[in-house]
Length: 267
Image: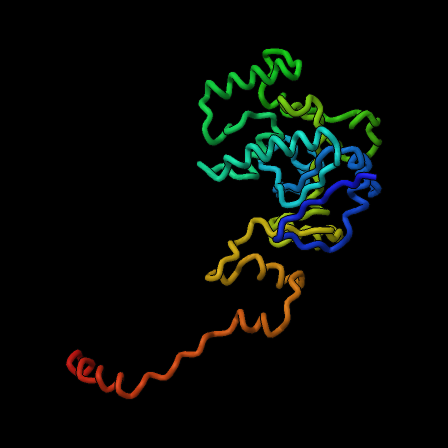
């Protein structure tokens, strides 16, 4: 049969198999088996993560670093629309991730990049019509409701909730959920807060967000964070080479002699 797809960024370290979470067999995550899409989170509050099903109502971008996509028509429509939006991203502070987040909130293409206030308002009214919502509904209230029957299956008592999200042109009930930061940790909850040492719960994946860039001239990039926690396996000689101080060749005698008068005059 068809299997869900786990999408993982290159800066994600996996510590254990995500299959139990994907299949909804972990305690407290039974509804995950019925999600069209699961995403990781930039949520930095462990309390809000639990109380609000992954900081669902907090206006912080959902993170595309780890995704679980169910193979069905709704997910295919969502990914197709995301691809269209991503083709016009990386302009005026919009990226594939902000396009993803706006799409999950049912916002129009270019919501942040190129929309006027009037265009946003017109889209919101169109969205209310499409979703069958009263004209006076606030935008925040159009962004999804807890799913009591995710994809037709009754909500499992004690499970983290999924949300039915209305996305014009995609689905009137796109079933979406956010993975717990205790299991799919972001860089802040793992490296800074060290939530795993406080709770004794080891995550199955760590995404190196909230870190310095991994550039050639940056000594404390994402690789270094992983190395500090034993999550970056690299041969010792490669590690030593990356930390080595280059040798400076001795200055030739003639070069020293040529500069000697100048030094004497300056003195």
